[in-house]
View 1 (cartoon, rainbow, N blue to C red):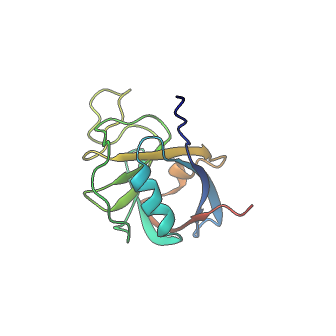
View 2: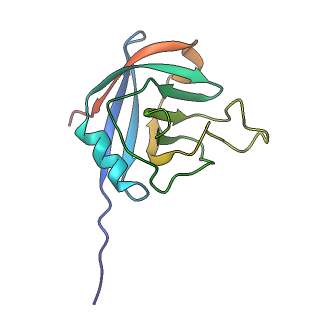
Length: 140
């Protein structure tokens, strides 16, 4: 008997209202399906986003889910949910606690939920400290 695993992928837009620019991300439920489901059920999310090294993370959101296959190290351009802070995180590179320049370490373990698909404007370099974002499903 063959078993098929269906991986759901959904494209989202992160609108940086201060700059009127967007970043495209793709959610992928292969690593954290319950977390992806919780994110989709709570869209749109309007929240402040902050810069921490080469990471952008939101204020606490209405999304509430525990660790699910949580990781203490992530890859470049990963998108994750941070259970401890109730926040969404976009990883553009090392954080202040990354000791080795190649390793990207979140503050505490995160549930990886997707990838940054397109950021032609290097938004990470334009966010000084805090700005408002709206995260929503991409319009077809």
